[in-house]
Length: 195
Image (cartoon, rainbow, N blue to C red):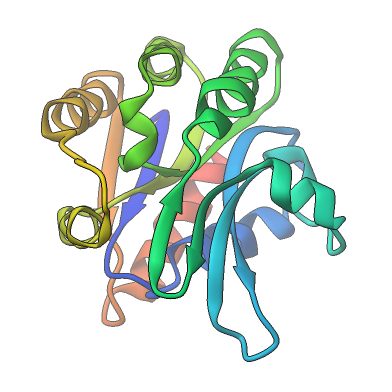
């Protein structure tokens, strides 16, 4: 297996499990991950796209948060900035394709970023490479929730299906993470990293 993805309910710990296992490895990493922005009450106020090479960095400047924030939540409204995927996200995918990192992290894919043709094209191209790719694929349940909460039209069913097919076609798998199978999923992830 070359591509390994988790999907599952919101806040089940998919990204946390990935980071935990990667923390104990010394693999070179490229790609990206999504970071939550929290206010002083620990409420989510937005989501930022980050370079995977910064995975274990603990401090980020405010400018970095503003520049790469693709979803901001203000007064209950969700404001998208898809230019983050058009520019920064596409750049990270191009770098992942051209460098020789041992792991490409894609945490998370299968959501609003698929509205951007350049980003989606680079993502599909990356899936065809014989590379170890690790990440989170947005579950159908979470995608439908995102559609309901979006002010603008969000219809990426076709893109999601094609991406899912690419993962399976190119020696990949998508495992659902639940509370009951967490230990088994962690073992499979560790086996994937060790192979």
